[in-house]
Length: 198
Image (cartoon, rainbow, N blue to C red; front, side, top):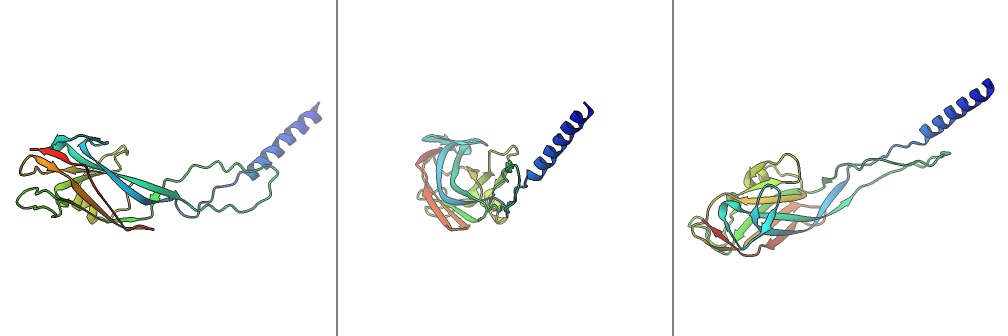
């Protein structure tokens, strides 16, 4: 009886040792990164989480959501090894980071905003930004201050207007997005017209 128990115990220990030796670490050579492939936008009623399309809105509720089409990639290196039990490689994915840097965002309109901002002039300083609004901590910053940090490329941005126009009228905003990119360095789009009320 003692021999049977000893045999079962030793077999169990052997299987545990084989199992431990078969657990391989996931070696990721560098972080998982993403690159921007395209940018689109929606203009309308904004809060700290999203933007809903509307055709008329008060200026202090107006925002533009920049939606980024991203491509994710990483380099994984697995060294060949001999194991009696195949390794599972059950690892958590690393948090992706951008392989790009945001250089500038220029916002303009073909409509005169006020006497200081005629048609075609940069309106960037009239906007604030919420970066990655899906995060638990949401921070609203001046867009110009955010751009001065030369931040990594975001996954999502919401741009909020912080000054009222001279008169109630329809505005279409042209967004020019400049980055130090992996493949692309410039994106541009124009929002649908929205009437901004004073």
